[in-house]
Length: 239
Image (cartoon, rainbow, N blue to C red):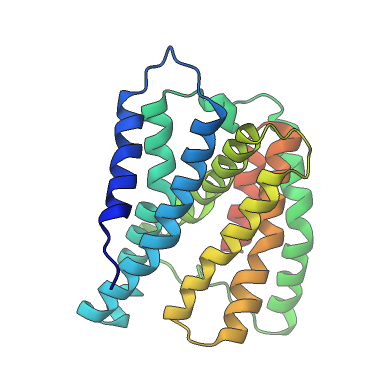
């Protein structure tokens, strides 16, 4: 097994850079790219590693329990971008946390969600479709709603914005949008650990997440607000 020491040194150096950053400093393009891809490296390396380690020690049933799934999702998807923003002292408005264009943003969210919801309504009426979240109790539904809704949308928006600024890309369909959507889809290949069917993983988890992730980024870029992106992603995940 290769030594993890170089990886630890990389993350230690990055963390010191974050801690020593002063609000009066302006973030460079390099800073933005390091934050974006450092965040992806953290997720793509440690999420599957932690999942495998937990399965080996506690079993698959433990890892697929609601409490563990929520914890893994928060720690390896939502936590680090929040920490980076706090340590960098960036403006939350850069990531769409504003009421500017909120009506436009919500309208985009509903419009993009409509085709997906129409398909699911048909499946519910004629194919006995049941959403994965419909059986959650009230105490579990609210944490799932936040983490698998707005927090995942923020994870996508964080990556799109950081990469676009880092690469000085101002196009609507930008490098940051495309790279983020591909990486987000590939991230879901970790589900192979739980459902070892490569065809199902590619169709339902990898390919099935590229287009929705693109829409999350597009809504943000069109409106400069995260409200519509969060609404769109929440509707897709819970209905």
